[in-house]
Length: 279
Image 1 (cartoon, helix red, strand yellow):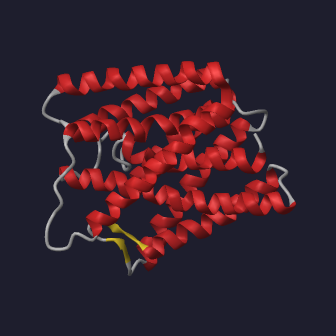
Image 2 (cartoon, helix red, strand yellow; image 1 turned 45 degrees about the vertical axis):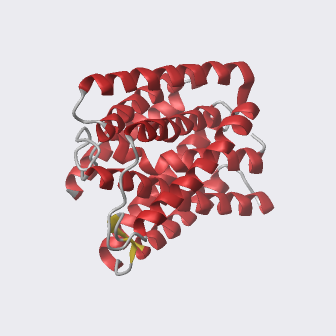
Image 3 (tube, helix red, strand yellow; image 1 turned 30 degrees about the horizontal axis):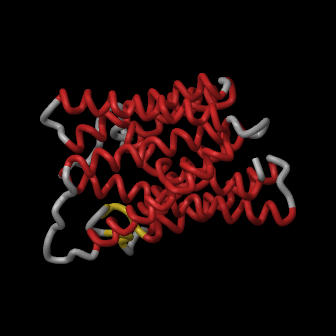
């Protein structure tokens, strides 16, 4: 499993880095939209795996929402995207956190899964904001592509810290009913590596003084929020009794399994970096 994870990462990481730094914002937006549509196909299978027609219809709906969001972004720009789309998305993650806590505390019985239409709407709210966040940050200025790369590497670093710290030191479960494999020690490992990387990246980006302290705080908070994204996808899979959202990425599961942390972290980071750096 670890070998497969490493081999897949060795293929994907150069492609992602090249795309983020080498493509303009609009071509990157199209590439990211393709990734979101793949994740949307997997989300639709979690909602209604028996009907291919329903999955296709959901993919069309997701594509239309992405297209409409892109038109609005081009018309109104970064500040409007932050104010009217990404900031409210954070409220949705507060509600998602409530779902995770409620499921974890439901000792002795298993809560009923939300209805299909509820999960379809939730899927739009989970998948569209991170796409908009990445596009917004990328197009926010000369440092935009580097900030997107920072965010992606931060999530990868935190995931690696959680994986190895959890395997080596994991004793205390984070949310045993939602995701039995995650531990508090794993979260600590994610925070430690994430903090070190944020500090190094901030210095590399030329951030100094009080702003560097705020940037470090943003990196730590983004790692914590990314854990919620991971837990929420685990919760949806728990409702459907599946381990992975798909099998497209050997060692990693599906596309949705690979971007689950980013679904919560990207909108949070976009709002935070706009506030701290004024991008």
